[in-house]
Image 1: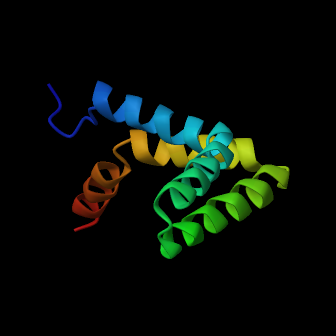
Image 2: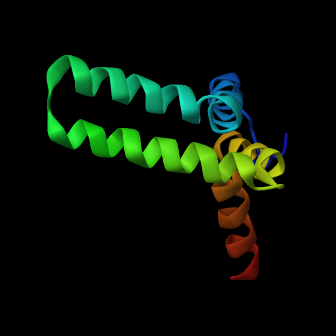
Length: 93
Protein backbone atom coordinates (compact mmCIF):
# COMPACT_ATOMS: atom_id res chain seq x y z
CA UNK A 1 0.00 0.00 0.00
CA UNK A 2 1.01 3.55 -0.55
CA UNK A 3 1.91 5.05 2.82
CA UNK A 4 1.64 8.60 1.41
CA UNK A 5 -2.08 8.12 0.73
CA UNK A 6 -4.29 10.63 2.53
CA UNK A 7 -6.63 9.23 5.14
CA UNK A 8 -9.83 11.03 6.08
CA UNK A 9 -11.22 10.12 9.48
CA UNK A 10 -14.94 10.02 10.15
CA UNK A 11 -14.51 12.31 13.15
CA UNK A 12 -13.00 15.05 11.00
CA UNK A 13 -15.78 14.73 8.42
CA UNK A 14 -18.36 15.15 11.19
CA UNK A 15 -16.48 18.17 12.59
CA UNK A 16 -16.33 19.71 9.11
CA UNK A 17 -20.06 19.20 8.62
CA UNK A 18 -20.79 20.72 12.03
CA UNK A 19 -18.59 23.73 11.21
CA UNK A 20 -20.38 24.30 7.89
CA UNK A 21 -23.83 23.91 9.46
CA UNK A 22 -22.90 26.27 12.28
CA UNK A 23 -21.74 28.96 9.87
CA UNK A 24 -24.81 28.61 7.66
CA UNK A 25 -27.60 28.44 10.24
CA UNK A 26 -26.37 28.91 13.81
CA UNK A 27 -24.67 32.31 14.06
CA UNK A 28 -27.88 34.18 14.86
CA UNK A 29 -29.18 31.62 17.40
CA UNK A 30 -25.78 31.71 19.11
CA UNK A 31 -26.12 35.48 19.36
CA UNK A 32 -29.48 35.10 21.07
CA UNK A 33 -27.98 32.57 23.50
CA UNK A 34 -25.34 35.15 24.45
CA UNK A 35 -28.09 37.75 24.80
CA UNK A 36 -30.11 35.58 27.17
CA UNK A 37 -26.99 34.61 29.11
CA UNK A 38 -26.14 38.28 29.51
CA UNK A 39 -29.58 38.99 30.95
CA UNK A 40 -29.37 36.00 33.28
CA UNK A 41 -25.91 36.80 34.61
CA UNK A 42 -25.53 40.55 34.13
CA UNK A 43 -21.87 40.09 33.13
CA UNK A 44 -21.01 42.89 30.72
CA UNK A 45 -18.41 41.18 28.48
CA UNK A 46 -20.98 38.51 27.53
CA UNK A 47 -22.88 41.26 25.74
CA UNK A 48 -19.86 41.73 23.48
CA UNK A 49 -20.18 38.08 22.47
CA UNK A 50 -23.80 38.78 21.58
CA UNK A 51 -22.75 41.80 19.52
CA UNK A 52 -20.07 39.87 17.63
CA UNK A 53 -22.32 36.92 16.78
CA UNK A 54 -25.26 39.19 15.93
CA UNK A 55 -23.21 41.33 13.54
CA UNK A 56 -21.42 38.29 12.12
CA UNK A 57 -24.68 36.45 11.59
CA UNK A 58 -26.29 39.43 9.89
CA UNK A 59 -23.44 40.46 7.60
CA UNK A 60 -22.32 36.93 6.82
CA UNK A 61 -25.93 35.96 6.08
CA UNK A 62 -26.35 38.91 3.72
CA UNK A 63 -23.23 38.01 1.79
CA UNK A 64 -24.22 36.22 -1.40
CA UNK A 65 -21.39 33.68 -1.03
CA UNK A 66 -22.04 32.70 2.57
CA UNK A 67 -23.08 29.12 1.74
CA UNK A 68 -20.05 28.36 -0.49
CA UNK A 69 -17.75 30.00 2.07
CA UNK A 70 -19.30 27.90 4.84
CA UNK A 71 -18.90 24.71 2.83
CA UNK A 72 -15.28 25.66 2.09
CA UNK A 73 -14.64 26.23 5.81
CA UNK A 74 -16.16 22.83 6.54
CA UNK A 75 -13.92 21.23 3.93
CA UNK A 76 -10.87 22.92 5.43
CA UNK A 77 -11.77 21.38 8.77
CA UNK A 78 -12.64 17.94 7.35
CA UNK A 79 -9.90 17.32 4.82
CA UNK A 80 -6.33 16.61 5.89
CA UNK A 81 -4.87 19.35 3.68
CA UNK A 82 -1.78 19.71 5.89
CA UNK A 83 -0.82 16.11 5.09
CA UNK A 84 -1.08 16.90 1.38
CA UNK A 85 1.14 19.95 1.86
CA UNK A 86 3.73 17.92 3.78
CA UNK A 87 3.78 15.29 1.07
CA UNK A 88 4.20 17.96 -1.64
CA UNK A 89 7.07 19.59 0.23
CA UNK A 90 8.74 16.19 0.81
CA UNK A 91 8.61 15.48 -2.93
CA UNK A 92 10.17 18.86 -3.68
CA UNK A 93 13.21 18.12 -1.50
